[in-house]
Length: 287
Length: 316
Image 1 (tube, helix red, strand yellow):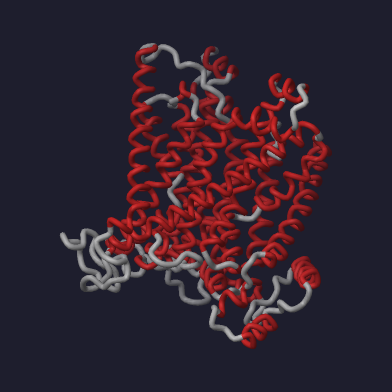
Image 2: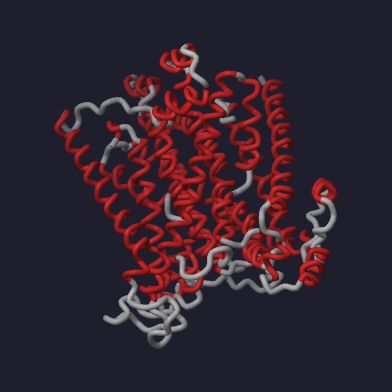
């Protein structure tokens, strides 16, 4: 789908316009990266920045924002900002762990599938079919199914892997297959290198951009599931952002900030990482 | 050509049956192999061994796995969705609610198809213009926003704060939500929002490619009116891909409905599903997982058949 677009000609000037567009694209990417970085840093360092404990009753319930409580208080009178800051690490850690495991497993399966498809096309089904079966399960149901049995953060990570690995494997396989036909790979094989070595040192570096862009999408996807688990009130506990949404929903008319604050944080993180991943795969000319 | 297509469809259905069997194994046996078990997970660390044994007995966890799996899968083949942990048949628990969820999804798809086509083609034809630039950026921003966030904002702004539309979907028991159309607006809007962004992005990209194709350029150079170029040159190239993306998006909606239903308290399967998860009622979740998995597979096959029928490459 992402074939490089033919160079745009004429209409609004030649190279200078293209260069300007590219510079603007670069600036936008930087701005997005800074925004995502800010959310990540605030989320990670949250517990040390928070003015109150997440469980301390600090004021009357549903108090409006003021200087002491910039985002007001929730239905039990707890400081919304503090709860939000305390919720950062669990969300970020769970999402990052789920992303890392998914990408490692997915990339391995994808490279393996490409290798088998290259060497023994008939046997490829052994790798891809089980993943196809998993891919048929809608991610939300994978999440709920795993959480029924393992109602914990571990369950959320397992579910993100179950739902994400088939997609990652497919993307990596598609990117790696053409690389396997390249001369330097054939040369390495002719040299007598072992296949795992070839895949690791001759193929993987050439699909690294694909893997990185896919990692971005997996992060967004894992964040979606982590948020959803908290939002549904299953699996995640404490003050993570999804759970805050879950708690704030019934009283949203009285205290909208308790709902909006975690919502904005999840949205900024998801949209930002998605944009960054998109700039990786987008050919320069189309920007 | 027709016999060929028939053979292809039959082949795909065969593969789907195998995939479904594999999925049932994952959904039943795979969950059994997970470290937790529904009995101990729900009773907590304070449960006495007798309570645990009773719970395991009640959930039927003491029989061998293979036997339980075969009974369950055999039941599914006969349309028996199994029995929930508290003894009621799963089919009965889902009966009315499955229909309500179907109404929600169907309405969303009905709106998604024309809207995404119109928007996608309109943006794709103006590729590179300011309108397209803004539109595409907005779409890219929207695709990553989870639908439960959209639903949350809509419930807050259009529901709770302004009171224009009901923030909770109160449907009297036994009534179809179609009798109370006002409760459907916000849930459908939330579901539509994200799926529309995704489908429009794909259709826009397809239109862009189609507009640059040699045959379209030849039509333009021959002085054929723009309207005819659009209808006979661009749309035929866009529609097959659009149909595929509509089918894929519809399959994707199945998961999103659960979350949106929870936001608006809509009487669909979402509520049953979440209650079952938090009480460890595995049979209900397993039955729904199989049902949704089968629907997803059907949608994928339909997408592939549409694709091959017009000569595009198969996705599997």
